[in-house]
Length: 550
Ligand code: ATP
Ligand code: MG
Image 1 (cartoon, rainbow, N blue to C red):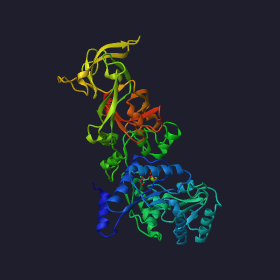
Image 2 (cartoon, helix red, strand yellow):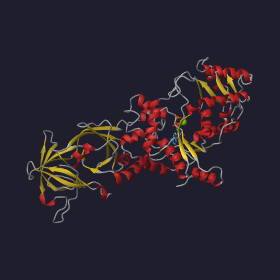
Image 3 (tube, rainbow, N blue to C red):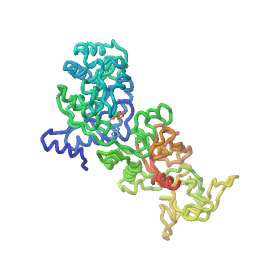
Image 4 (cartoon, helix red, strand yellow):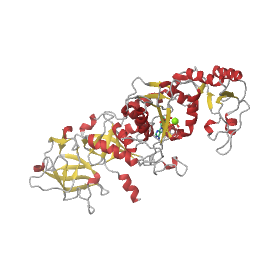
């Protein structure tokens, strides 16, 4: 599938401007990657692969105050899990600090940068507005040698944070505020995850980014629309520095999703304030959260293809992502039996102590998935809401006197309901028809309902975490308060689910379908004897229906 970026790359190759494109994915290691980053990753790695080039993974690690090794590690794991390989092309902007500093000196020598002694606040106040020009700093025309000396002493650690900055000398009256003598270096006395205490001045994003692209021979520097206004500065720096190549910045629209917030800063606050279980909480839109939730990497890539790449901002329905997930899982997920709210069934005419292993298909969509043995016995668990003592109209499942099919097992008829003192059913006494083994009757009769079940004697208990959208509204924060829109029912815990024995062997990272209920995956919290499963998604979008009703 093509888009305006792929068209530009194809045209550049056709015109002989390059043979192979080089792209990069440039995360700042100040948080975990989210589904928006996944779009950028799929685009950058995808374009490079399609045109025979390569994509660098480059950490934009220029702000040690907010960056951590934990994030560097998590980002690499997430990109790899998504299915992309940067080969030897792992880079860090911090590897270029010496070169970048050299280029800063180059600008000062050429009269194109100066050390400004104004405070951050003074700089902000004199920057002007969209309609009014800024005013020159009193230090703007200080002698080159004085700026050189101060820059060296900034680097040597002689001044506290914020005492001085290095600014490019461009045009304080430019209609583009980014060209009004932008800051290139600031003093930050902080240990860097990679360079330690070697530096106490750090380049700004604007100074580091384009030059890092040029050092790496990046041909197409793809970024989101908020950088469009930075492009003249990107080009000014490339034009005025002796960089080894000339990258081109192209902007595309960032991904926005309903019911979702994609701001690292806000996601960090959810984690640090304990609103979620961590960056990888299954409700988080982070790649690690989606993974823990059971979303396959393939579905995320498919989703990125479906949303495409455009130049105008838009918001996609979260339902589209869920559609992609169901689409992949319907094809690939093994079918299993799990009962979330168990109700006991005793088959009174089934021999006491007898157990049969019944052959059950693993995936009707994929005959190659084969079958498995599921134990069946006299006592079973079925889903509580598959039974109604006084069935409502259109309720075709189990009720007194009614026959239903147990999937791949037998037909059973409910003969008697045992209730507790509150009148609630606690056990159904049923009889089975031995002639219906496997789920078909010789006389061709067909019950209206087929239920899933688990043999009580062999069931493994599990905790199941049911997830719903993290926010109650499609446009969280529209009223100004994101936290107020958090969905209090985004996680519901079912403590006594009963699962077929094979589910005890399901590995973390594998998502299965509990028949009739949805897709589920073991949580990393799961232990032998204390299983925990996350619900990835229901089979159908019940949420939309609930919303429509209320
Ligand atoms: P920050 O505010 O910390 O800069 P960020 O989300 O921009 O947050 P980066 O680590 O700078 O995080 O992003 C890395 C790359 O991912 C950038 O090229 C950025 O444009 C891209 N990106 C970030 N968010 C989205 C999004 N929602 N959709 C598409 N691309 C995105
Ligand atoms: Mg950014």
